[in-house]
Image (cartoon, rainbow, N blue to C red; front, side):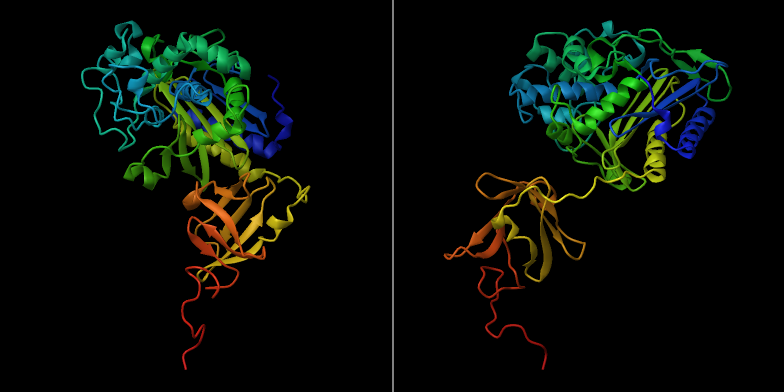
Amino acid sequence: MTTPQEELFPATRRALLHRIAVAQAEGRTPSLVAAVVRGGRAVWHGARTSVDGHGPDENVQYRIGSITKTFTAVLVLRLRDEGLLDLGDSLEKYLPGTGAGEATIAELLAHSGGLAAESPAPWWERTPGSLRPELADVLGKQPLLHPVGRRHHYSNPGYTLLGALVEKLRGAPWEDVLRREVLEPLGLDRTTGRPRAPHAGGWAVHPWADVMLTEPAEDLGRMAPAGQLWSTTGDLARFAVFLARGDDRVLSVETVREMRAPAAAAEAADVLDGAAYGLGLQIQRRDGRLVVGHSGSLPGFLANLTISVEDDVAAVVLTNCTSGPLLAGVGADLVRIVAEAEPRIPEPWRPLPEVDAAVLELAGQWYWGTHAFALRLTADGGVSLEPLSGNGRRSRFRKNADGTWTGLEGYYAGELLRAVRRLDGTVSHLDLGSFVFTRQPYDEGAPVPGGVDPEGWRGIG
């Protein structure tokens, strides 16, 4: 992959290089490689290494740990989109007898299925997967630690179950399905289950001395869908574009948007930290912006993928040490540097190609009681409703074939908006899930909350 370095200003490129240089030096890691994506392709690549004269490029593989979970989630969403399962289905419907079958597919994707965080000892990340040949070996005697669906509790075994689900419904090994349905269509030919040269070696760095110890690269066996993959900054850059924009060969833009939406009940600490979890994606508030992606770690490796959809910027950071720089912070900083130094240039304003006069008639100011709102027509053929004060409930609405609209977000998500007309065809009011919006505050001729006091508006005399 040719990286068009010239697309970023020199000052921006230097700031990016400085950030990863600080991370590699202060994090005491043998090497660190990073990439930045903007406008649908990689625009910067950087690397720092302790080996003189050698720096990893965008084709060098590192182990990406739990970023693998996002790939597994993509496979499950493909099954859903094909009608082979429903996210509300219980696991028991497809994999009976696991002891964790009460959890739904959606709960497993969002880590709210109540399962344990890890498989029984010995530690699965540093021992051969052959020690856990069956699902029972992964789940142990007590798979569930929490009530199903009540809390977000990160679970590696949960993604092992999702991998087994994929194998059951596809009739093929998880890795084969992944290669055929995701990796090949997206051109991720340097993402594999086992390392392929050139690849980095994994190291543990002594916490109190500048010396290192090699880490084993175990085949995780049954646990592979939770953390097996090796990849590169080049491939993960392309994967970031897919997670932001979708690709109909794999998943639609609507489905990847669904993956990026919070899907699990957040812990109190997560609320304070501004963190949530979607369907195979971590969601965070960083530097005042919403970012999605995933982090990963296995002995000898750390990885991070960070995407700001609104800024159209993503970052990939990979390193080969067991513990070192906090890559989630590094990835967020790379996104912030580009987003702030070279903010996204909006598309030119263009008038609508056509407009329905009956819909245009609805545009403008409306009142719910005494609260003022504005209804606007949107470029995609829908409408938006937002408070004029800047504070309050707001939503975009998708147009339906019968002339109504369905809310897409916030309080009004899924709620129906319709224009109620009088016998003469003029608009009386808007009905939004039983809320009545009128052209004047407490319009006398409208249903509740229309005017009810016969004396009308008055001051204090």
